[in-house]
Length: 329
Image (tube, rainbow, N blue to C red; front, side, top):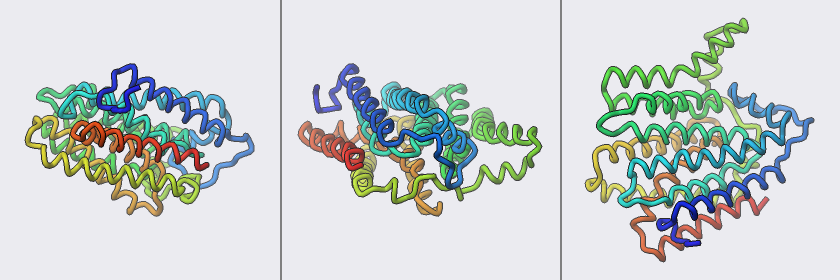
């Protein structure tokens, strides 16, 4: 297999993805097979609590669905980068990079919640990337906003991302129809949940405030998730993202306006997520998963501009640091 991932054929990229799906599935099955006696600890957003309960009640189904969602999330997001020509040259590097990045952040006791966050991030941004051409596709915009609006129901720490990206899309498009689609799509999941709870004789307003609340914490402690090897992996990812950002700004004049809008949205989302780590009372794994996927989407810009030897060294460094997260357990 070619280690220069910028030259991967589809078969090689898929083989890399499948290897990481299998490795991640084996890891969560070995390390986090939930006993039925496990009880809920910590506070969850509404869908987060359901995911935890499902993991405890149906551990085999949870692990099986984890593998399928891992595969789909990576393909959903990386496919969009190829279709919209996000990089200076065509490459399938995003498939391998998303697979590696997700492996380093999703293997955790909260793996059902984290893989659903990865799915929502992939759906939201994978569809949103199609919406910056001369003619926006309303169904892509609406479904992207639905995924974005569902994020606070899974983990309320993702609320700032939902709000800021919705505002950014409205400001970039500035048409009445697309503004309406954006607002309806992003607010509909919360409205539906509050309406269902109201039908169950709960207060609509109290339910709304409980959803839009940044005080939820994950069941796993910060120390349990942020191991030394995972911190090293995240540090490498952030350093590579800094290099990618600098490289993009030195060559942004050579890309089309639509491509610049895509990069603006990705970078705004990245900045919002990093800022969220300082807003919530503790750095939440769901925010880290979203950051890792967005960084993986932007990293191919660095890889296609680097030489073959540099690409190989960077990829091996990223690969080894990702694998070491699980090996250290």
